[in-house]
Length: 115
Length: 112
Image 1 (cartoon, each protein chain N blue to C red):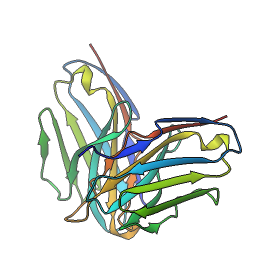
Image 2: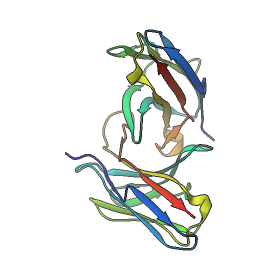
Image 3: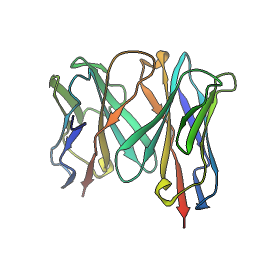
């Protein structure tokens, strides 16, 4: 398996523009997570899905952020309108139900810069 | 609110040294503790610990969990420059909907 695939790897945009980040989880994994990482706050969970259904979006900073998972192999995280404080690395991760513990597999991340 | 605190925040050692990284946590209904290594980009999985006192080992890395004192340590012996990375600790609790809460990480730099 190719692992978790994210695109784009880098995104530079201007304040006010819409940004869409994409993720393909590992085949067979039924959990998908979106994280944001900054120097100040570390890794923060934004939202996660189980079997394509959003379970907990309490980490989504505000209404400008939305996430969808239309099927088991694809998810998007959208920011509209984007702001400079959204600049961060956004990671998608997936995992599989079963046993104790949540072993996450991370994608390579999207480095977002909002100017 | 679940809390995970790692120490030290950063550490600089010479090749061959042994290092110990610490992770303490406060969660309700603990399920597991995980260690990840983050080099350039994506965190990669190292260990998952669920029971106290049982050491997990992989080569020069080892980790142990103390559920009574609510902490874990990650040991790296005979460090190499390739061990330079951020080491992240994360805790999963059933009270938080099985989400992982991450610490801020320890930046380890191994100099030749």
